[in-house]
Image (cartoon, rainbow, N blue to C red; front, side, top):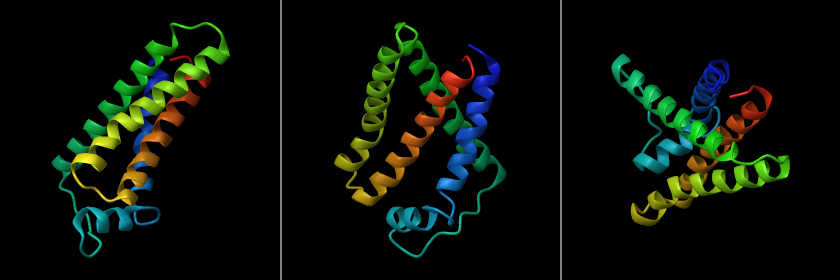
Length: 133
């Protein structure tokens, strides 16, 4: 797997996460849904920020590598896209649905997190075809 594609994906997914959960987009709504109080002002220490971004990057890279391994089993483009769409849907739903079902998370919170996961996987898919990963 090409290191360049993985590095680009790691950067893109972190930039997207920073924007997605910022007050400019869904950060305020997300904080209200999670904490059920006033919008939080996230003041992360350096160690907690490194942990959050590190775990997120590791999870996103693992998802991308597993998707690429699944896709590499097929040759035709339509098969790749079908497999990719199926795997992405299964990963996103499998990742977010338990939070909604078993932790009594509100539905808007589910959609915010679902949208982020879908966007990250979409970026990964675009990079898979644009940059050989």
